[in-house]
Amino acid sequence: DTGVSQDPRHKITKRGQNVTFRCDPISEHNRLYWYRQTLGQGPEFLTYFQNEAQLEKSRLLSDRFSAERPKGSFSTLEIQRTEQGDSAMYLCASSLISERAQYFGPGTRLLVL
Amino acid sequence: QKEVEQNSGPLSVPEGAIASLNCTYSDRGSQSFFWYRQYSGKSPELIMFIYSNGDKEDGRFTAQLNKASQYVSLLIRDSQPSDSATYLCAGYSASKIIFGSGTRLSIRP
Image 1 (cartoon, each protein chain N blue to C red):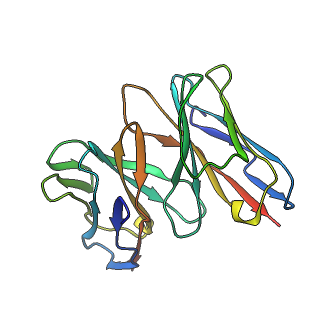
Image 2 (spheres, rainbow over the protein chains, first blue to last red):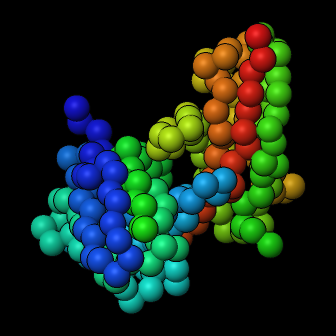
């Protein structure tokens, strides 16, 4: 399977705990995006990387959220001190710089109790 | 005002008919537009993209873009039950894709 992969697919955690999600993009794609989606809404942009550089972060991304892409391949998204409002589907997408279309992974569904 | 607006639906269409999904956008800087299909509990799947004014056809799908009216649409011909899903309209600007809230489409047998 050469598509975008995400791990884990589901995560249940207690409020106040830290969680980390991983995304592996399509291998030749140099851009990687993180989105958050809640029920009945479209995906909301969080941040994106071009190779290992984080080029933009949304105002939605509070200081409890951090993302990395250390070698320009896989990326991690960490949420510290989780809150119930963080419960959502976290989606990763990747693209080529030369193309605008983004391809999504299966997502990580987070539930904060 | 949201940057990309869609009617949330649900839009109910009989099997075999044409489904018409519409979207408006506010950012005149948006250069490209996408339609993603999302089944319940799954992630979005790219089905069409359009960059230029006019129509673009791909199988049973036709995307239409009118930049003067800031309007994008998706037509699905010969609708099938498997087309029942939420359709997300999205615009590309400044290296980001901004999504609408989606239109829920239901194809009734």
